[in-house]
Length: 338
Image 1: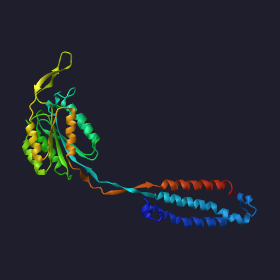
Image 2: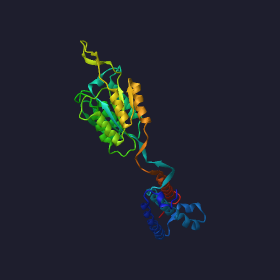
Image 3: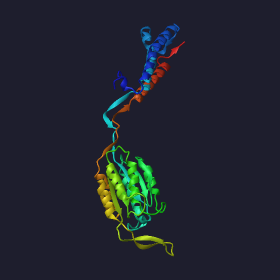
Image 4: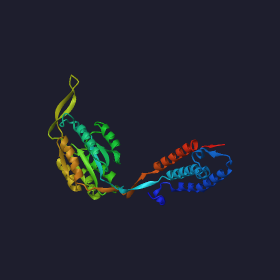
């Protein structure tokens, strides 16, 4: 570190305290002159030519004290050493809005031993654990669509939100068009180059005010692709039908309508892709394929930042050491007697 370079200090204004050094020198000189003639240091007993040694020895104490003061001032100015490595503050990522189906059909247990929603929540939580710079938001829907979480980098909050999700809270139905439109609305003001909607549903559109194809047309106009993931095996699937006489969940096979053609059309119109998830692994793979197909983009242009290593503690320790030496000499070799 170059002590003459003020940019090497975090608080260079503290160096103005060094103007007090001449004041201390004058004070030390005046004090020396004011000392009684008969005073002598214990060091004079160690040297035969005490008259020639004593003037030099008497300057040691103020020299140590002033040096400690200078070092303490330098420590207050916080000297720093610049790291040769430059930290890039630009954050790369994708803006992702996830639209998750919460209709009662997500209670189907074809992903045994758990139902579709349980598996979807687990996979989404794992998906968040693998992200670092992607802003992610969440839209939930059944008979209507609502923004559960806006775009955020706070994955801890998102995980907690996902953990609390359950069916039978919203009016029942599958409003795919509303879900896509709501997610697009959250993304339209984003400045990220890569913006995407991930639609996770297990059924056909049967509710809502916005047509799925109208929503897809809006996505195409905004240049935001919609990636659709159809969850479930199709056909008759086990569905909870109350409890039996032993208090256990009773199951019955139910045919749940699906419309893969609609999801394929939505994805095709917007430039996205369609995936089919028939188990936990295929749902996880579908989400990963969405990321693999997208270009990373700059969310925040932060420029570059140099990193610094603090060095003030070294000067502070040295100042303390000089004061200890001064105290030791003043109490022993250079102790003066009236």
